Amino acid sequence: MDVYFSLLIDLKLNKPYLGLFISIISVSSAAVLIKTVSFHEQFPLTVAFYRLVFTTLLVLPFVIFRKKIRNEIMNLSKKSFFIMIFIGIILASHFAFWISSLGKTSVASSVILVTSHPLLVGPISHYFLKERLSKANIIGILLSFFGVIVLVYGNNIFSTNNIDSLEGNILAILGGIGAGLYILGGRKVRKNISVWTYAIIVYSVATVVIFILCLMFNSPIFGFIFQDYMIILLIAVIAGILGHTLYNWSLKYVHASIASVVLLGEPIGSSILAYIIPWINQIPSEYTIIGGAIILSGIYLTARKTEEK
Image (cartoon, rainbow, N blue to C red):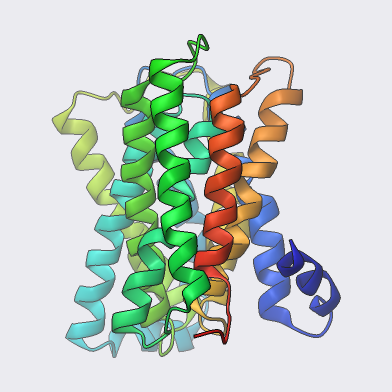
């Protein structure tokens, strides 16, 4: 994991890498905190809605009290505005699929599969962002696909572990596709737009989309205990502001491939937390561990910055 060693060396010298490092630690807590919400299995869309509502409200003061940001929003081009609307829709789909998967599969499988988005980011970056793939990157893509087969097929055919389900794994994969498109969109837009302008528009759009989905699928908005709201608020602060927003800020300064590969820390951190926290105490199956290791190795080869051709 030499990428993390490099990150630690450069923390004081390279603020974007410091931002990435903090953001990964923060997002690693999201899955276990979501599992702590009492209604996350019954109403995952409600969890997604409140996470986005709280995150948007936390971002709002940075927009209201900064004239520069308000002026930037008012002077946005139609193209940039509509691209961010699209990114907001993608972000909503990511949360809807991924949070739904946590009620149907293990934390380890869910977070590993949702983190497999470099398999999408790498090839698209190659063609559209001119960040060319090396031979090692291509081998990584193939290796990761093999790992996905081991994890999903093994858990659903051979494993006696009842935590993982095919439906949950598919939802996590769909969430990963959403995450990949979200990262690519952010990488493109953040070159010319400040993080707060980007965040308030994308989060607001995602909140509206999730609210509509809650209405469509009869997912209640009110009537839950105070503790659940506070847990989701904590998710918004830690995973939303320190995680996603800080991550979005770093996208302006680093390659999309590098931004993707450091997310390998999330499934590792989330899996450890899911194992050691008493009220979750999930032990990953052998297929999740083997398949996950293959996937993460492949993702590393897929997303790492390299000059090999």
